[in-house]
Length: 487
Image 1 (tube, helix red, strand yellow):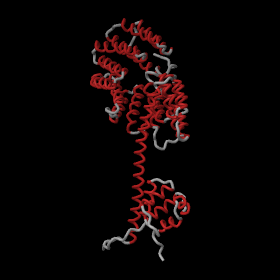
Image 2 (spheres, rainbow, N blue to C red; image 1 turned 180 degrees about the vertical axis):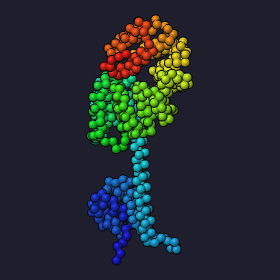
Image 3 (spheres, rainbow, N blue to C red; image 1 turned 180 degrees about the horizontal axis):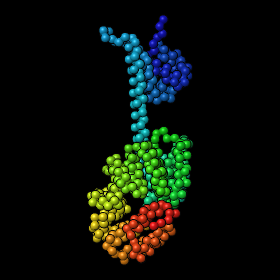
Image 4 (cartoon, helix red, strand yellow; image 1 turned 45 degrees about the vertical axis):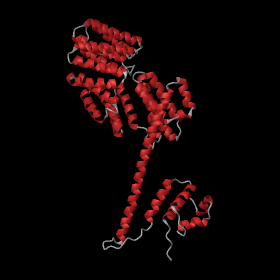
């Protein structure tokens, strides 16, 4: 006698019980029914409805998704009712092939839908967590440094991975103009990372990521040796950790390390790290990496190659959604063109840079836009216009307490005065740089460099080459207090 074929839901129940370790006796006891009732469901002696299956699944602690998968699996193995006869019907072997292909297709479709839904849900929850992190970071700014640390140590609401990420990104934005505050933010991010809930592996991965930002701030606030020592601890933490959802970007870390190698004048290593970052970067990260790679090429002196990289960055940056990156690309592009003596090509870019600065409403960006205007005006031979712009830029950088930018703009001004043969004004500018550096306690090697420039100005021996050498030195010395100026 042929064995009775179970119903669709009866077979689904059998699959759920076997997959999750339930016997008919145990399920019957948990559901408050006779064991024979469960057996009848699984053998097909008693019909089981979808609602009944879902109730029994709840008793086993299962979700609606588990029921759906079990029903799908049962439907794939149960025989379909025979179709009406046709002279072109498949043979039994052909039907088996069709059934197998249908089963595989259903499984692949289910897996793909599951992966898509999981990815969408993770992305949605990631954005929500990052938004909450930004809100928590704004709240923390209202407290003292000591209170911030206490809140992170004691208050679970502040032990939030989104907060750690927000603090890291804030530290990066702050580092150039307020390195001390940036250092505090990065240190706080590391502290948050050590307290977040979850597995040790997740905390390790998050701490490694935050430590990369701490090393980045140390390039500005401490020294390159400090930064390098901190970065040495980044990758062991990162590699010991796990981040299955891909919440943290390895490309970002590689690009931060590339910036350190650039400051160390290890250009080959920096460019290699930029390339590794590009290979891992997501669509919205590529513009950042390409812009940073262009900066490395600029400092290396490869302005033509930098322009090529900036052109690639411009293609992937959405100016509407990423105006700050667009500003960086266009500012650097015009700067490279001016340095190459191509001020005519740079002139139309100046207008766009000014418009972007006005849109960003950032005081430093507005000053930089005026600075670019002065440089390009000088390159076009409009000296009076350049002098007025660069004098204003110097005053603005002094008010913003940015001594290195003040010095760089002053040297651009000195070049214009040199072209007009105004030696007395060059001497004045040189003396004012020394005064600013000493008043703002710039490191001694940088002061020694501008003293050499002042001596050359006093002797009326300032050359364009000397000015350019000193500008290149100041860009490096800003983050390397041990570097000496050798004209």
